[in-house]
Image (cartoon, rainbow, N blue to C red; front, side, top):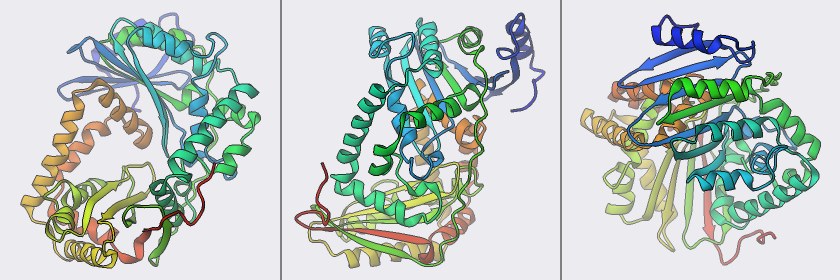
Length: 457
């Protein structure tokens, strides 16, 4: 974050808010972004970051709390603790019994939820304007006063164990994706599942949870994002009142597990209870902050962005080898994977489908994509971005993800500008860099009447 800006609005607001505030609650830094809208970022003395986007178009607002801790920060033997703790945050606090948070929110028409992913955990509310102070007080309360006891832990442990059984252990596609990441990452913590390994979930102790809460659920490890029908100064006053007394914590430095370059293709086949063969292909790919990431997104759109994209047209429309083609770029803080998934017809010829896949990929590595195809891809990505921007919750999520993942909420706009600058040579370069056989991990789901390993219970 840059030092205090000379922007007159910020300077006057900061002076008013800091009058009489103690050191932890004082605004220590601020900046603003102008691009058809005014978005402001502040940091309190205790390290809490606040991002506010006033928008009075509709009488609603989104309030999100992002913590800079996800499954990549888990430790060996304690995988899944970030996700388990997300569940714990909906239990009792010292000031509110279990269930009261949801009752209070629902009575005001709120939508609430949370999510844990590799780089972060966040909690979100969207509700009619006029209820800002309630949300601020409840979120601050559970950041500081969560009850952590044996009964709370065991209750949520059972919920998470059952979630893992449903989504992974007894779900063929879940098992296939988990196996893909485990095989693709030899060292990096992106290789273990966000939900955690079952033995680790069972082994997490109450002391582990208390230490996790103390280390990671601290103001200097959090970002509050508010978008919608609010007054920025009111937001800041309420945040100062409810969060400003909290002390910062010593957040441990991350032990980054650097993934070594992959030098040979990895391949595995799993007998699974699938209706049709399924193949997952993954290549090590750049992080969200990498200058080539925008070109990778455009490449992905060219290959799999709709019915007219190269892979869908070849494998589904023209050759009728597959019923579905999917692809995804992992916009993560550290280098992740670029994935392509194929679902074949029942009894389909996987070898033939892979040959045709490789022909398409070899073609895009061999020769640049035409400018017209690049522009079509960029238009498709931008259209999706603009559709989402109408929703306050989506804008808050994008701002929070940008701030936590790249360290700068302005990536919300910078990334769109980067997409518009992508050239055919940029896409060609990232294709040559990423789409190498030696950089690829392949996981094949082979249909059987039952999984090779019996479903667990």
